[in-house]
Length: 120
Image (tube, rainbow, N blue to C red; front, side):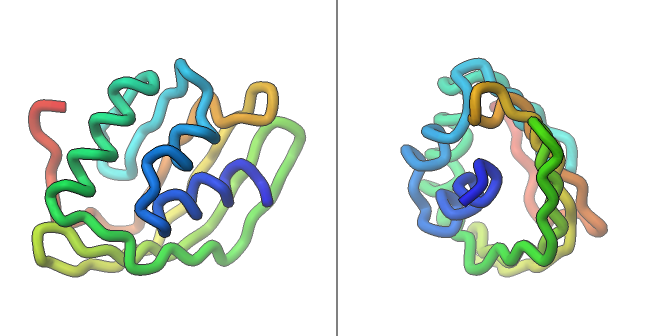
């Protein structure tokens, strides 16, 4: 399983520890609609807040995944529920690795999700 597949599996399983395990301590994650999270502490807060506010990944299907050295690129469909509202959108991720872990992850979406993070 690639690092990007492990990251997605962590979200599918609602497992914050598994998500963080595949990220470098100083990782940068940029969500498809703009928010930027830097480092384990901030990412852990984001993930735990999202899960605590009834965030659930219902399905995250990777349609195609390419690995090129320390870069992984995936095309996917994301289906989730957050605060009682379901949404599905297509997107892509570019992940850059350092020593086998994700050091930089940027997501792109074809449509904007229905939620907005404030204060993180």
